[in-house]
Structure formats: structure tokens, C-alpha cells
Length: 251
Ligand code: ADP
Ligand code: MG
Image (cartoon, rainbow, N blue to C red; front, top):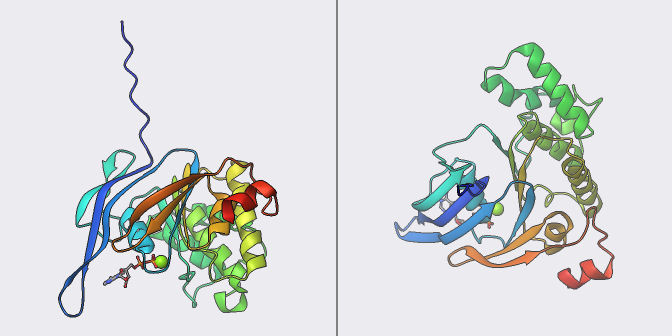
């Protein structure tokens, strides 16, 4: 008897996604047109594109924060109709609440999900330790460096134990060294399976950053935004950015 094996379902599956915005002059402006994209289980994919090409718009569609005007957007085979449990996002601008401590910022999503105090504390402590923020639980964002603030951003996403992590240029507000350290820490959590996350999508406008973490880099370009090319990165992580093989891809 023939065995029927279903193809594994992608974590994220986008087909023909279209997004328009209305300009102040009431014209329709097409920002995304015909975007096809898949995030498979076990991969880190980077979406590389210039500022204004529609990357954040696409990510916000995947996060269920805004709706596409056309096409299909699925998470594990099901249409995305709003923010999905299982998908967490990290923002370029950190988006922390300044009046809340590190611990409180990290616990907030759990509180919204109706999780009780004891479990919130336990999970927040776990996320805070994982991302290297141990000892800063009662600090306020303004007392932290940019790199530490973004670590809070990561802790807040990781505390949800997300299946999928959507990263919207999380390193671009940081200086080169801070960005590199945080990237290395993220890759370590991923490669050593210290987090339950099954797929990561990183948005970036920096090819070096994209190649340093991703298994695939999709090149996105505008007017309207769509994926134009794909680079497969067959180099081991952590990646030696000084190596000839790495330089060949980036240069
Ligand atoms: P990227 O993240 O690649 O820099 P964005 O997705 O933020 O690009 O923006 C793509 C384009 O869509 C930009 O021209 C931006 O001005 C426009 N845009 C984004 N969000 C809105 C919105 N809510 N209303 C109108 N235009 C928007
Ligand atoms: Mg953006």
C-alpha cells in the first residue's frame, strides 16, 4: 500500500501578499506586491532590504498586527487573523515601558496571557538569565545601555517561549560591538537549543549582519516590495566574519 506522507507544514507561509496604504492625498500606494515567503522549521532567515522597502510592514503582517490587502498569510497552515500565541516580536526601538522595571517589562506579556504571579516570576527569571540580564531585574530602562535595553526586548519575547521569533532590525540601533555580542548570544541560544523557538526571521538592512546569523538571506527590494533573490549561507555558526568564505558572500 502506498504510504501517504504529508509535506511538513512551514512555520510561516506567505503567498502573493499585497499591502497598500492610503497616502494623505488619498492615493493608494502599493508597498508590498506578490510577496511569496516561507519560514521552515529549524531555520533562521534574514530579509535584507533598504529602508522603506516594506520590511516592517511585512513583519507586522506576519505578527498579525496589520492585515494584508491580498494573498495568503499562514502560521503552521492556519490563516493569521491577529496576534498569534507562538509568535513573538522584537522591535528596533526596544519599545519598553519606561515606568516599569526590567522584571515588570518582561512579565507583562505573561500577565496579559492570564498567567499567575508565581509562574510569571519563574519564567521571567529564566528569560532574563538566558539573555544575560541576571542582576538587572529591578533596574529601569533609562538606567541601562542600549544593548541591555534590547536584551530586555529579547527577554520579553523569549519569556513567551515563542515558536517563531520575528526580529525587526533589533541590532540596528546598537553600536557595532554591542550588536555583534548580542547576535552571538542569540545564535548560541538557538544553536545550542536553549530556547524552544523553531524558526527565526530577522529583518536587516546590513548584509554582514544578515549573513552572520541566517541560513538563508532573502533580498527584498522596493516599488513595490518583494523578494528578488535568495542567498543560501552554507557556513558554520558562529560565523567567522573575517574568513575568506564569509567575505566572498558579503563583498
Ligand atoms: P522598512 O521597514 O523596509 O523600512 P516599512 O515597511 O516601514 O519599510 O515602510 C514601507 C513603506 O510603507 C514606507 O514608504 C512607509 O512610509 C509606508 N508605510 C508604512 N506604514 C504605513 C502606514 N501605517 N501608513 C502609510 N504608509 C505606511
Ligand atoms: Mg523597518
